[in-house]
Image 1 (tube, rainbow, N blue to C red):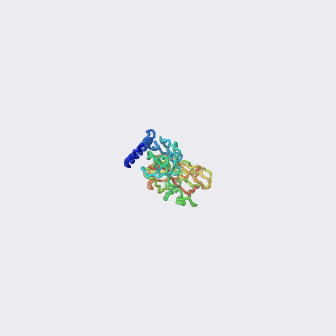
Image 2 (image 1 turned 90 degrees about the vertical axis):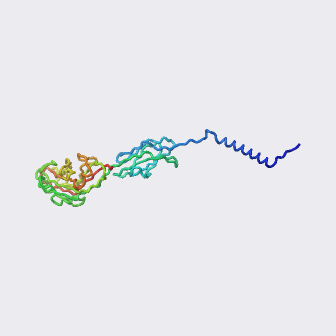
Image 3 (image 1 turned 135 degrees about the horizontal axis):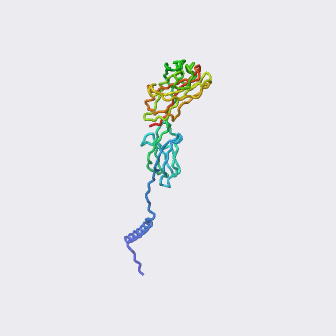
Length: 308
């Protein structure tokens, strides 16, 4: 029997052909069409809105269509278009609202959301904005004047009227607070006094929601209905709102509040109405006797507004 030996070059060609055949078989097994990958986009939530709810900001949206998503990042800015800062993570992805407890009153915030899955982030959602109502601090007057005609005995708080500029132990006095008994704010027989120059500052473009007045006041006796009536002017004292009257004063100092955060005293206010040249507060001291003495420690004003 004869055995044929192949030359070395032929052996190398045969080996190469065998290896190629094995590689080709492996390649065919790896390229099964059912195992090919599809491409997906992680979608943000839609329909983002923001508003005020119970003095908080509430952000709401419609969930992402990607059910595998982990949740959302809530981002916020004080400028439309950002830059935004992340303030919260909301899970699971079926959640559709977030309460922003940290929003400062008087500042408008702009919100966007991003969906996340592991380290994967969607693009931003649409932007929504909202603002909690703002308010000034209690403002004190720095000027005053008694009404000296057709106002009782025409001397207002005749003793130390500037003592009503601050919340402290000193106070203004109106002794014998009129020339006839009356509980009418427009009575010509009751003493009156102006307070003004409150230096009220409100952001440009804001909407006025309400005005509060605080009177820290009392009377020498609680009998004969001692009260104080307040009116506001926006044109330097030419025109006045309808009056608001306290309940009967007691013989000890108490804070009496007139108006609320949503009470505009019967009119629409502009920002210029609160300038020192225009804004005035008038107190009329009332009682069903001409001999009642009334005392005033502080007459303060707070303005509530929605920022632009």
